[in-house]
Image (cartoon, rainbow, N blue to C red; front, side):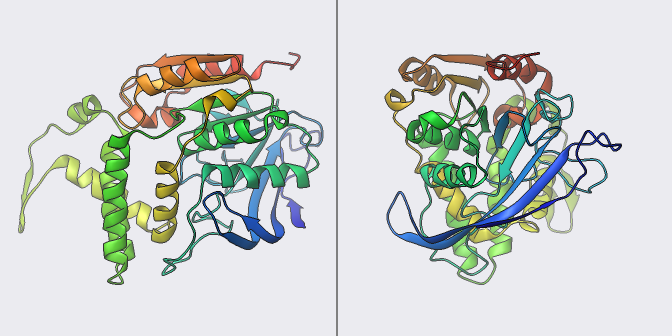
Length: 349
């Protein structure tokens, strides 16, 4: 069952703004998990936004582990979207042309079922479990087939998992900075981040641990060239020694993150990234891959290999960006033509 509400008037009315519906779907009974065990009566928070949500092609937009069901900011609602510029009215993923579906990830900090503060026993979650949740969600909404899934980072992993498991339910997938498996070096960095959070949480300081883990993570999201350009200035002397410009940046970002997210949920979804494995030979959905040469977390060689092994038609666009792994949030102009091409199939201009 699901509850939903309309939060905006239809676009055809005087407001001219996209219509938005959101709700919480309850998956009654046990939900079997990919790595074993079950979750009972899972709740899935979702949001559907677009100019014509009753009849527009639906694109699911999925991001990193911090992303939410609010994909883009909508004027007059106070909503804060995580993919502004890429998704929205007149954007590469155009909310006037498509209905945009987002949901809070299972195991995350949003309103979908996940661990709460102090809960260290939440089961391990797979990208296949997220794909199952999306399958249940579109089934509930009466959607026979998604026009596309556009996923970045962890969302790209979920898109690949969905394509493997439910190839008849999506017309095209776009995976940005996500491959068929995680690189051991990226797992090394994230393993240390999770250990920091667990160590701190065991002492009742989970928020402080999350601050440190996020600071470390930020150093992997961007490129060395960007850090050299921004943070090459001299350190400043304090009462406790020296403080480096990059240090101030990292801990400011860590502080802000720790105020908004649940430490145990970060651990859950960080682990889910490192457990990710799909079989390219089972992906029979047309696929667009986008990789960034400077991405420290997803080497471009892994995406080239994935392109060559996907069973369906698959293209890879390679971008160069100082933003590294975070390019999917920043490089709107570079993404625009690639996304337009990927989403054009079956749509009349």
